[in-house]
Length: 82
Image 1 (cartoon, rainbow, N blue to C red):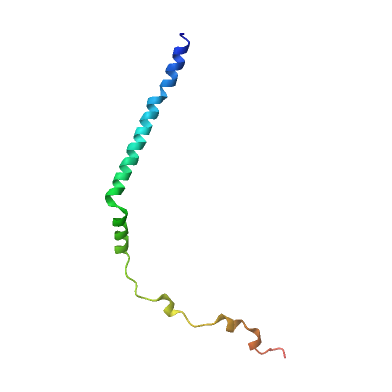
Image 2 (tube, rainbow, N blue to C red):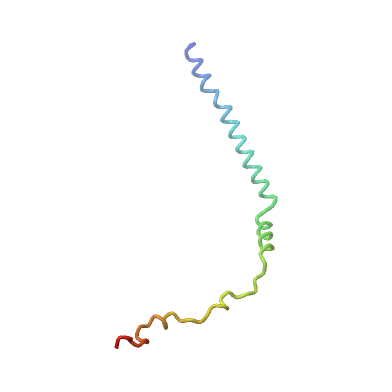
């Protein structure tokens, strides 16, 4: 019977450490959730949309009207060797 006592004590020692780690993880997750709930996703979206300036320009307005097919047709040119 004396030989069984150290085996039982050895198995009980890590349990409080595991319980402490689980409690700390639950408290950390709860704190993170609570802090995110205070701000809310709607408030963050409003902050981002307020920071974006209104753009009234058209980026396609300055593009030149060049047809690449007109430049690639070899039959439009005269052969300089003839």
